[in-house]
Length: 580
Image (cartoon, rainbow, N blue to C red; front, side):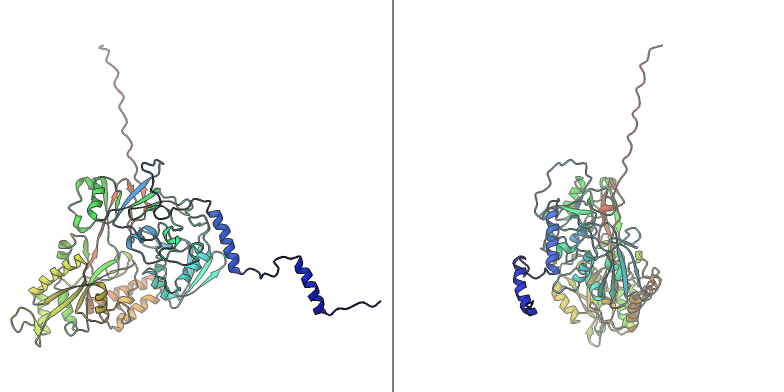
């Protein structure tokens, strides 16, 4: 019997239609990994919608007189932010509300000691060179919508640093410059590889909020859902946002750490400091984060002192007079030293800042253990200053009261931001003191944009500026010869080498030694004259304790309820007398 044999291609051509006839949809290509991920996200979002989510901006305000035994804390702030995403450019008070309350980083600083502690990272380690770090995520952490924190969220956050056209916050640029790549190691560990060793990297991570990938996978911008209705891992979640008047946080039921004593934090807008003090006097406010010099100390009455604790904090900020060392008038360090000895910092602190400022001797924040604690400013000594000016032939040759040399008067044009009221007052005091020693100081209030142009083009004699940074700051941008903010054209190879050594070292002791060396060089070379550090005075109701200030404000999750005094026992009435 002869068996019919069909060629294999023809057999396949016959069998394929028969197979497909009973397999509807088999002609469709298999789903891509992105489609699978999107379907999984859609399924999870359907479950999440059934949960209680934070209301959006502009939601109905809380009902008045709500009684649910929740401890409320009212904080007076001068303004409320446009969004609550500290990963983006955000104002001071927005960062104060969002970071460490709603969002968290891999690491944090202990408010009492300033040392690094784990937050979303349970532990971390580095290689010998300090160019690669490994982080193990804390177990059991959930986002405020109930979803677990994963390694993918951390990798997503670091990858966002490389995305163009994203208006990132000012602190994140430092991490971007250091980052080479991020590797995933298993379900709960990552490795971050840096371009060069950088001892400041861990400090920078304190300001890097970890973002939920399932919220921001479409992009990060101030008007996205995650920026207006944030989903973080911190101790609080957004409850209500009443436009520009009030914003309310409540305890996050999924928080991995200790449950805060304060169940609800109400940030209430008081557009000026005077109204904030009215709220204090009427006991409508529990915390006034910052008292202005205009109200200190006159407005701190005995009644306020009895009901509120005054919390003092010196942040890692400083003001300084920047000298253009390329100018012929200021090229000689003796001139810069003489001008520094004409500055009475104590008088300025009293007259301008009402004692809410303290003299500054260098750039490093000494509570962090950096800088030279024995270094002293050049003293206010007009007599010695005049002698120095005479030594370099800056003398009043024509008798007009202004020193001159070669027919050129010693006239300095000082740039200052036009809206810096206290800065202008400070310069007016300097102008009076300088004039007594034959130096003409011309105050030039300038729009900040135009001022930046003058600084970059070196079109200035001096400028009054301020620096706001971290407890452990890398000052390469300010003092290095190639630094972005080195407007005074400081070219000093020893300063450059010291800054590079501080960045590469892996020992904290060595960093301290380098910081002392750097401050001493700046003290001698004087590319700038350090002036004052601000003093922040906050008012905290005595019903709360453990109010520890930080560079970014109070941590309300760490506030504790003050123990209430026990009521005095009521004396029993004496039995009636029987007359016997």
